[in-house]
Amino acid sequence: MCGILGVIATTPVNQLLYDGLQVLQHRGQDAAGIATAEGGRFHMHKGSGLVRDVFRTRDMRDLAGHWGIGHCRYPTAGSAWNAAESQPFYVNSPFGLMLAHNGNLTNTESLKRDLFLQDRRHVNTNSDSEVLLNVLAHELQTVSTQYHLDAETIFKAVEGVHRRCRGAYAVVVMIAGYGLLAFRDPYGIRPLIIGKHETPHGAEYMIASESVAIDTLGFKVLRDVEPGEAVLIDTQGHFVSRQCAQTTLHAPCIFEFVYLARPDSLMDGISVYETRAKMGEFLAEKIRHTHPHLSIDSVIPIPDSSRHAAMELARCLHLPYREGFVKNRYIGRTFIMPGQAVRKKSVRQKLNAISQEFCGKNVLLVDDSIVRGTTSREIIHMAREAGAKKVYFASASPPVRFANVYGIDMPSKHELIAAHRSDEDIRHEIGADALIYQDLDALKMAVKSVNPAITRFDTSCFDGHYITGDITPEYLAGVETARTNASQEESETDECGTGQLDLNLA
Image (cartoon, rainbow, N blue to C red; front, side, top):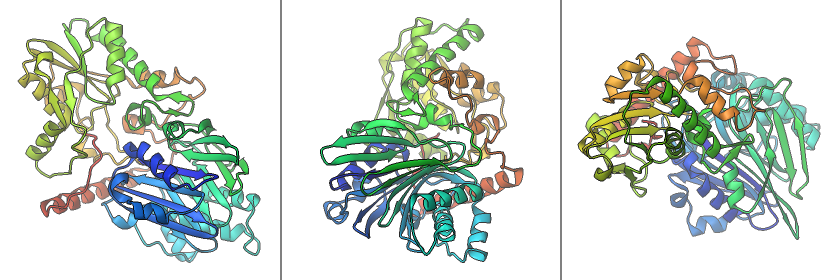
């Protein structure tokens, strides 16, 4: 999961890109980068850490120009962190290209072989984003006549990318001397939204992972980039687009709405806030029918992404909604640590229970999902220590049982608490008096009810059905091995005192 941003403006763009990445910070906290263009020259600065830590005043001064792209990064597919994999990536042949990518290619290894043996291109990192950049560069070289660029040539090159690349990809690209290109994979798995701002000097455009970046920076949401579509905006602000995939299927990742996206975002015409409220409504209906015997004194969310589901659940069940945990917003992200005791300590540094909300009460805790189960177990223990008589636990999403291969670096399958356990086994493992999971059909209905035009979703981490249809058991075994090796490398690094930051999916 990453955040990407592209802007064509009528004034210097560095501050817009910085502010946009700050808004998208929740999508990636391992690294950040900005590239701008001034005439035919690119400027770039990137590095490890949060946006606010990567960029200083001197860096911003060097990012001159009226158009550019930005990226904030989480690693994907179990890759061990390497600062060289910060984005954007750059190539200068046959044209100067700068690329930022959100997603994960599922045929990276075969593409690498083809790039080396057939295309005569060298890839410097293990990043699939660099592979994607070189595939685009080669396709541009193949279809361009005497190295001439126009919209027709660029769209043909994107057609070639769609023919060769598999998996999930939402992409923004700077083409030296020409303008901004954006495109989305034929399934529309990862989000990409277009915004526009009219100024006295002409139209400005922004393309971002989530509408919240467009809204907060004063742009108006125009529409989503369609699956398989390419959008091209030249440096004068001329906008053209074309469908570049032979076949498409609109199937966005449903986990975006469960956890990844900000609640004030709109993606694929779907309000994240409304979907989470609907999740609470459907979850309340399940509790009413399957657990009518539960004596619940209050409903308490696990901050922050489950709050809206918990509020709606409480309303539907006519129960008091209470805030029982306070989140420390200044601790930052916890380090991956090999010891269970240290992991438990990190949970307590992030959350603290308000004892008055638990003492002598039967509480229903609501979370967006249960992945490892480590955090759920510790939070339930905290509630009991605060005096709760009974602790019931509800998840706004179904059990996470399968690997994600489209850009979310979830733990390896053997770390997923639901991979090989029944609901009752999970309840026992986390120490809850009752455990209620959202049904997958109900989750789909919750999202579809907000925009009935979207009828398909990638739900692979819940049901093991991979929407692209090209995921084999051998591929999943390779992903599992990569994630296990990456976890071991991170643990060894942590023992030396320089650990990698982890996506908080505990």
